[in-house]
Amino acid sequence: MSGVVIIHMILIPLLFAGVLYIVKQGYQSLFINQARAGSHLLAVLAGQDPRPAQLQTLFEEVLLSGSMVALAALDTSHKVIASAGQPGIQENFQEDFFFGEHGDAVYHVSVPIYGDNGTLLGTLRLGYDETPTQEQIASTEARGIYLGIGYISLTLFLVILGNKTLNLMHKRLVTQAHELEHQALHDTLTGLPNRALLQDRLQQAILGSQREHTPFALFLMDLDRFKEVNDTLGHQAGDAILEQTAARLCEVIRESDTVARLGGDEFSVVLPKVDADDAVLIAEKLLKALHEPFVVDARPLPLGASIGIALFPDHGEDASTLLRRADVAMYAAKQGGGGLTIYDTDLDKHSVDRLTLTTELKQGLDRGEIEVFYQPKIDLHSGEICGVEALARWRHPQRGLVLPAEFIPLAERAGIINALTLRIIEIGTQHCKELSDKKECVNIAINLSPLSLLDAKFADKVENILHHHAFSPCTLILEVTESTIMADTPQTQETFARLAAMGIRISIDDFGTGYSSLMRLKKLPVSEVKIDKSFVIDMLHDDNDAAIVRATIDLAHNLGLKVVAEGVETQGHLDALHAFGCDMAQGYHIEHPLPPLEIRHLLATKKRIVATKEESEGKPLFSGL
Image 1 (tube, rainbow, N blue to C red):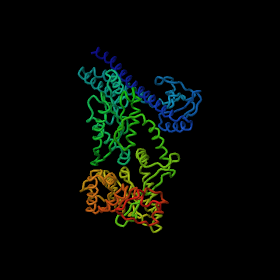
Image 2: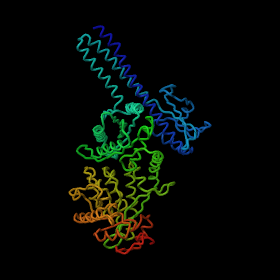
Image 3: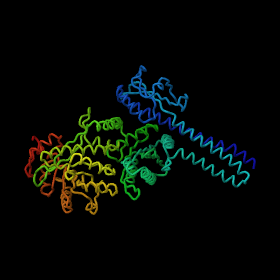
Image 4: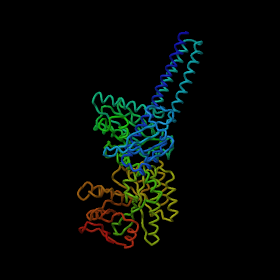
C-alpha cells in the first residue's frame, strides 16, 4: 500500500505538470500565431497605401481592437513615419520570437512592408499585450496546482479507507485532468474545437496534404443577421442558435472533417482531400442546412449564412494565410448578400475598402451625407403620377454618389441598418410633407430591411417620425421582400400589425421570387404587391414570364390588392401592363430616380401620360420637363 502511495505522489504531480505544460504551450502558441497572422495582414494593408496619414488612420482603427498596445511604421531609413499607442514601448523595441521572452509583458513583432510591385517600403513594428494570456496561463496553473494538492491530500486520506476507494478517486481525478485539457481546446457552449485546436488540425491537414500531394479546403463562415437577433431576443436565444448551428454543421460533414467555433457566430471547417468542386458542393449543403429557420422558444427565426472558401495549396501554404484568405472570401460573400465565395486575389483590395467604407458610412450617417432620390410611379388608368419610391444615395466626399447595392450590406453588417432606414424615412417624409403643403398629395414608398422588423421598438420610432413631421401615415408605404413577409416570426408579425394599425400601408416587393402561401398572404396586412422586374423585363419575349405577370395581377386583384410593376424599360412593357389591367408601373422608361428639386418640378408640371401602342423614342416619358 505504501508503494502505491509513493507512486501516486510521484506520478500524479508529473501528470498534472505535463497537462499544464501542454495547456500553457497551447495558449502561447495561439497568442503567437494570432500575433504573427495579424501582423502580416496589417503589413499587407499598410503596403497598399503607405501614405503617413492613411497609415495613422489605419493604426488608430486597429488600436480599437484592444489586442495591440503599440504600432509604428518605419521607412527604409528606419525613420518613424506613423505610430500609435504607448511611445515608451516602441523606444524599448526588441523583437520577440518566444512568449514572454524579454519580460516586458509585450510581444514585439517586426515585419517588412512591401508595395504592390514587391518593393520594400519599410518596416512595421507592433507590440501585443501579453498580459491577458499570462493571466489565463496563471489561472490554469493555479487550478492545476490546487487540483494536484487536493488529489495528493485525498490519496493520503483514502489509503486508510482502502485500496478500492483509492482506485475510484484516481479514476475520477484523471478524468478531471482530461476535462481540463478538453476545456483548453474546445468551446464551452457548443463542445466544438476552439481556435487553438483548429490551428493544430489545420497544421495536420497541411502536413498530410504535403505528404500525399492532395488538396484540402478551409471554410470560414458566420450567420447572417445573428447580431440583430442576439440584440433583440437576448444572449440566451443567441446561445440556442449557436448550439443548433453546431449540430447542423456536424450532421453534414464527414468524420474526418473538423468543425470549430472561433467565437461569436463565426465557425470554421477543415475538409481534407477536397478540391474546389467538392468544396462548393459541401458548402451548398451547409448553406441549405443553415437556411432552415432556427427555433427558439417556439419562434422560427430564418437567418442563413455566408461562407468563404480557401484551398490548399492554391490560396496559401500555411495556416495563417489560409485563414486570412478564407476570411476575405467570407466577407465578400457577406457583402454579396450571403451564400458562398471562393477566394480570389482581386478580393484582397476589397477587404481594405470594406473596412474603410464601413467606418466612413458610420461617420457619413452622422454628417448627413445620406440623400434620397425619388422614382415616380404612374397610375396606368389615369396616366398621372400617383406616388414615388424613395431610393437612398450616399454622397461620399471622395467617391461621389454611392449606390445602395454597395453600402446597404455594409450597414447591415455594421448594425446601423435601423438608423439608416429611419433616416431615410425621416428625409422622405420631410420632402413629401413639403410637396403636400403645396397641395400635391404624394404617396412615398420606402424599402425596409428584414433586420428592422426584428426591432421591437421599430414601429414606435416610425410613429415618432411621422408625428414630428405631422405626416399622414396613410401616404407612407413600406416595401418588404416576399421572403421577409412570409417569415412566420412573432416579432415580425407584431411589427407588421403595429405598422398597419397606424395606417401605414405594406407592399410586398420582388413578388414572385419567393414562396408565398395564399392562406398566409390573405391574412397579412398587405395593400399591394410589386411584380419583380425580372418577370416584367422578359415578358415581351417569354410567354412564361408574360403568363406569370398576368396571373399575378389577377391573383392580387382577387385578394383586393393593388399591383405595381417595376422594370418598365420600353413602351411595349407599358402597353402590355396596361392591357393586363395592372394598376401602377415604374421604371427607366417612365423616369429615372430624381433628386428632390427635380421630382418637385416634375410633379408641378402635372404631366399626364397614357399607355399607347405607339413606338417609343427610347427615352423616359417625362424627360426634358
